[in-house]
Amino acid sequence: MMDDISKTDAEIFDAIKKEGIRIRNGVELIPSENFVSKAVLQAYATFFTNKYSEGYPGKRYYGGNQYVDVVENLAIERAKKLFGAEHVNVQPYSGSPANQAVFFALLNVNDTFMGFDLNAGGHLTHGSPVNFSGKLYKCVPYNVDKKTELLDYDVIMKQAKEAKPKMILSGLTAYPRKIDFKAFREICDEIGAYHFADIAHIAGLCATGLHQNPVPYCDVVTTTTHKTLRGPRGAMIMCKIEDRLDKEGKKTLAQKIDSAVFPGLQGGPHDHVNAAKAVAFKEALQPDYKEYCKQIVKNAKALASSLMNNGLELVTNGTDNHLMVIKLVNKGLTGKGKEVQNALGEAEIYVNKNTIPYEPGSPFNPSGIRLGTPAITTRGMKESEMKVIGECIAKVIDNYEDKSVIEKAKKDILELCKEFPLYPGMEILR
Ligand SMILES: *Cc1c(COP(=O)(O)O)cnc(C)c1O
Image 1 (cartoon, rainbow, N blue to C red):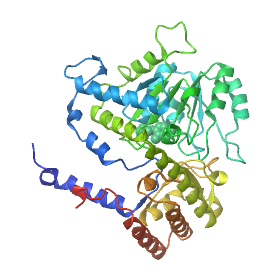
Image 2: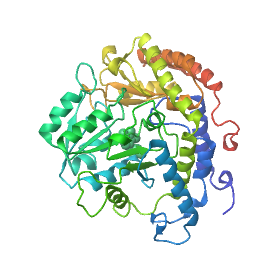
Image 3: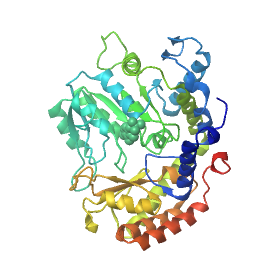
Image 4: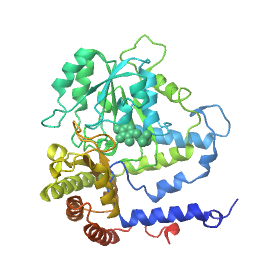
């Protein structure tokens, strides 16, 4: 019971060690990933994982929750401060169940809502036909303009007036520009719809003023905690206390959200994760976190410039946030996202294949590569490293079937990574 994992489970221990070496030797450019602090890892790996605490602070179905309440209350207070939210629920297990709880709270099955087209930047839970959001509800997607690849709020307003959705979902998973949450609010006010923003990707930028914060303009906002927020895998829901559209109802909006999470969807909260969320929120309230977020955006702009200077085309020709999408079409690589992702992976450059607006390929064989800077910025990399990484990526894409080019890029990346040690001194990586 008290032996080290290195003695009790050689197979898992070996995989953990190898994963540590993999993340040290490569550049992590998947924009939804990050590296949490040692303090977050420590909070996560605690005996709070043993506890059952169904319910909410002060109103639990099990005994022995006095310290769980301390943790959950701190997580809630810190999250409120970070975003200026009226009400916060930190119990959602991850981004997808958080979104599911919001759908349950605001809509009835078969109700109509509007969400961002998946190819252009929306998430699976924003109305994909293979997801609960597209199966249980009627999704009318809005899209970017074909030419500018930008959201056009006049077009969305027109569409909303016709479709009369009960809810409009704003938020992104692959859109490289800023979102005007205030404009979405005006559209929602015009037609009497709920405004729900999902800021899973950009939460850190919203909390630090580098992107418009949607909280003042929304009924409900969800976010994951493991992307730019740099916390453990998980999510939270922020909302107004009062329900604007249901003033006579028995429940407030805050009560609807809380009961949709528990008992509507989930059982016991993951208290060890919530402890780690609280630690991450405290970190995000420090001044150096804002500096970190500023550097994420600077690095993204530098990486975008390097990619474009080396002959690659980007969706919207650049980025305003932490991510960008390379269009492979003008390289004659339509539908080759998977092959390019694998070639870059061999060079230890980790990215993900992605659809592009009005995708000419398919979701499984798309024509884009999505990448971003949250993780490498945590490692301490700056603009000069972005230039080198951009050059390596462009060379590999231009020669994605040439093993010697991939080998050379892998060497260059390894050299670069040695200067930015990840989790230095961590026992398990010795
Ligand atoms: C990542 C993401 C989610 C889902 O988060 P999971 O934790 O993977 O379930 C939801 N919405 C958006 C916009 C995301 O980017």
